[in-house]
Length: 200
Image 1 (tube, rainbow, N blue to C red):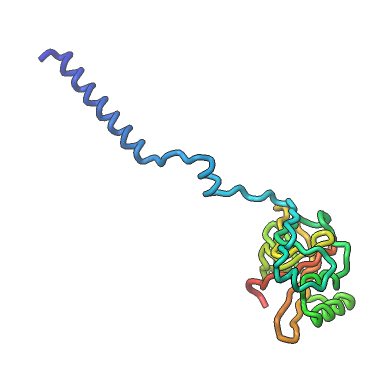
Image 2 (image 1 turned 120 degrees about the horizontal axis):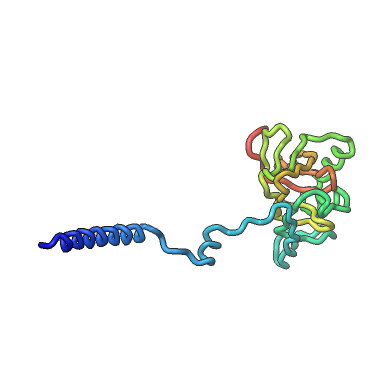
């Protein structure tokens, strides 16, 4: 057999082997995803420091039906930091709108007027936590003032390098239920916090 035919045969076999390996590699690669699929798997995070006003409570929401406040009732707000939406009202009005019991509202007003606080808080991109880092209240709050409204089921969303100071007031009502209330130092915003993780 001529040498040229032998060389051609070997090259053909090498080419077939290379094509087979390329085909096997392509089978291991997952198919490309559409933009819609990518967005479902990894939703775009909200811009830090951005505030949103949420929306009014539904007409049949139990918190609206409870009444007792002249403030606008909203839900799902995002508070992006101090001085963006300062609260112009009184502490008592905010607590009544947040539907705290009357005895808690009275006791808390006395504490604040007397300069008595339970702890100091820091609000940052890491959420709400005590200054000694022993208690973490997360990002969500039960209710928070937003301009002249009270907004239930809200969250804080500060820029990564921003830190805001606040006072913490802790009380129990006649039924021994505990309440944690935060008052932001710079703009007077009032928030009813979720239960903390860790600490006392």
